[in-house]
Amino acid sequence: MILQKFLQTALEAGTDEAGRGCLAGPVTAAAVILPAGFAHSTLTDSKKLNPVQRNGLRTVIESSCPHFGIAHVAPGEIDDLNILNASFLAMHRALDQINCDIPHIIVDGNRFAPYGNISHTCIVKGDAKFMSIAAASVLAKTHRDALMEKLHDEYPMYNWKRNKGYPTKEHRAAIAKYGLSPYHRKSFKLLPDQYRLAL
Image 1 (cartoon, one colour):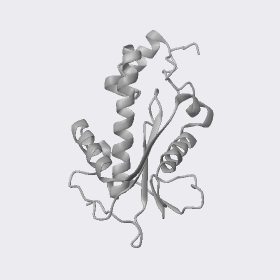
Image 2: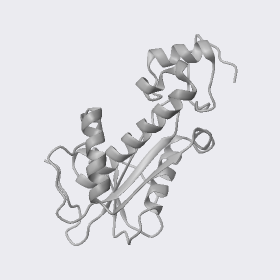
Image 3: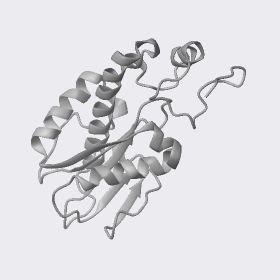
Image 4: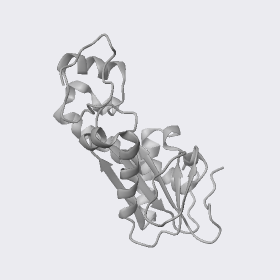
């Protein structure tokens, strides 16, 4: 059972990211403050949901929660910062969009860069334990997937509509055949050692 509150005196902002392990596309983060009394029987870690469930929950969350943000950090920024720092930046940008005071932040995972003077707590597998983090995971995943489907129309040879930029065998084979798009992360290991790729 997912718990709604981490603090007993105030609602926290939950934050999570999607796309950290991808070869192409942005890393995307969301931050959500759930309204008091919010509950949904289906809401859990987005990885445990199918696309229909995730997109349905996105509609529910965005219509029910006045305080949320979604932010992307582009591949070039990922290459400059590294993926860990880019993930923190995406979360910070999502938190920037919340138009109210944030009493506390709970973060999925075990590391986070402090956001101003606001206290935070890192929670391993937090997206399966706290509703606000689960909601953030759903928003981050659905917004990133939707973006990758749009980018697929520009570069259909990589089949991002299906793999969303993750390192599938099909995706790597397309990179070997067609080279890189502007949306690939050049700092990542895009191909096995037996292939060479001109960057």
